[in-house]
Length: 183
Image (cartoon, rainbow, N blue to C red; front, side, top):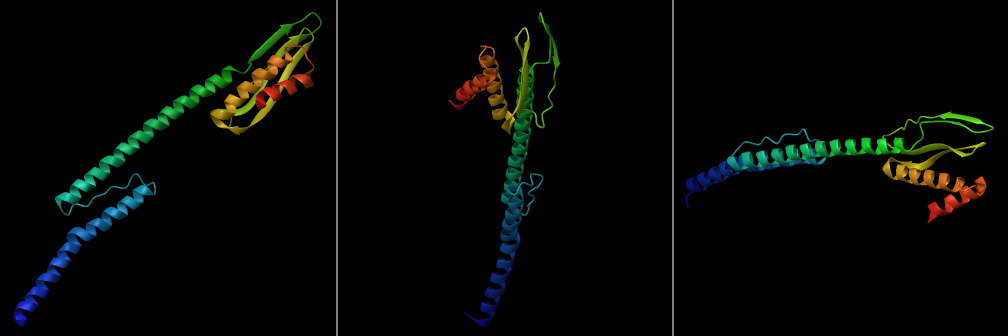
């Protein structure tokens, strides 16, 4: 090999390295940067490396996948919202809204309303006629929020009312309800 050939070989090698850097390596870095942003939650990130057909196809594939992910997230959020609204309706329907009872010796009037901090929660109340002279009233806050707390609340409310209506003293009714809940 002559010196001229070596110099030409070096120049061609450098040009190929620059071309590879520009066409491939820079594209990989740009795609990786966009993927990092997407992975960190930026679903508005668009991959737009168009230096060759492979990167155009890769960019299109990633963008299509992110669009599908956003559509799925929106659908799931909508379904969750609908389920929470349904759970709220069930919870509120389990609460008394109004009672007007006239017994031989006493007239009872009670009305209540509840506003939860979230769609459903663990706060609850109940009032009910125990006998002609007694109105039962229960108010509590189950630890926690959301559907599990609301379900526990509905069970606790039903048990307290059930045991109270048997005619046993209040302390025994609460004791029995507590034991049933602990089971």
